[in-house]
Image 1 (cartoon, helix red, strand yellow):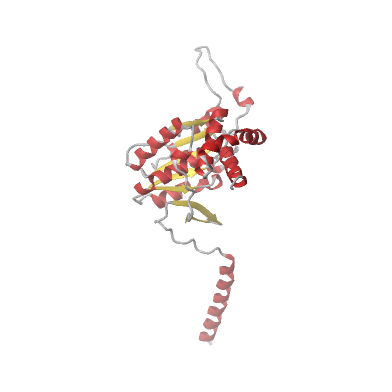
Image 2 (cartoon, rainbow, N blue to C red; image 1 turned 45 degrees about the vertical axis):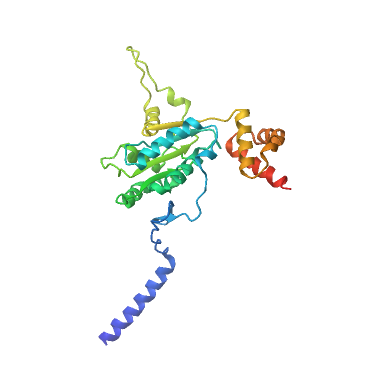
Length: 289
């Protein structure tokens, strides 16, 4: 009788486990450390590094008229790959001017020297300590990259990023840097009312309000700030001509596209590298004869 009850109990337990397994997410796959780029994925309470199979192939020379920004980030990345001191980087400014493309170009330039890229969404910033712990003992050099990063008041990822950058008693591994792009210089919304808290005592010393100080303190933890601006008309046209020639359009005929290229930018409301490349693709496709 006892054996029967035990057998019956085990069968019922197996059925319960089978039902539970149907609702549980599958175990994360093993990390392919041979990959050059990863995306941090999250499903429920589980997160993992998902290898990127097809990496965007953009070279530094593809990025025109941002020479100063390109020189600074190339130098910083080269120092990092060589095991020398390097800084976290915040890139802000006009959309489509090459901020995220510059990070991808660094991967293509330094991947054969051990550089790896991990892309993380701002909603997963709370997982940063887990990611850093996961890669701490790896021989590669990792850039953790967040594109279009910004926080609203009260978001938890803000505190996690601030702590990782410079504020935790546990120092991050020296094989990790944070590169981020944002349309906000201080990564958080700023309100006029916050400036009312600023005071100037009798000494004349300027004291910012606590809300302003809190928001500036995050961006200050990035050692390098790079600003990007919308291109002048001639610079925009240079980029259009570059992409036309890169896409195989005859070099002696690229100026034929000048008028339509300017109209394209006018309709888009932006003279950016992204808009220039999009126009070049359209032009070449329509004039492929």
